[in-house]
Length: 101
Image (cartoon, rainbow, N blue to C red; front, side):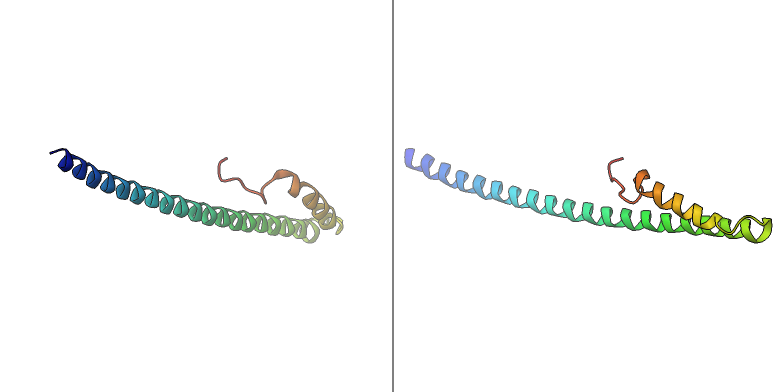
């Protein structure tokens, strides 16, 4: 009887260890998938931020051209706007987006 209990306990322990290893493997797989998803989201966010900045820059350039052509503003307005844009762009942080904000 004691031997049967010991043998049964050994079988149960073996099953428990396999289940534990299986659970750990699934957790590792889930963690790896989450990491890949975060990397993809970060890359997509950076691409979107860059496209957004390019659109804003194009709008600013177009506005400067209209000011020059239709309103007779000094042609150096585009160079001044470019200098301000390049000065302020790094400070705003839009080119380094954070997923958790």
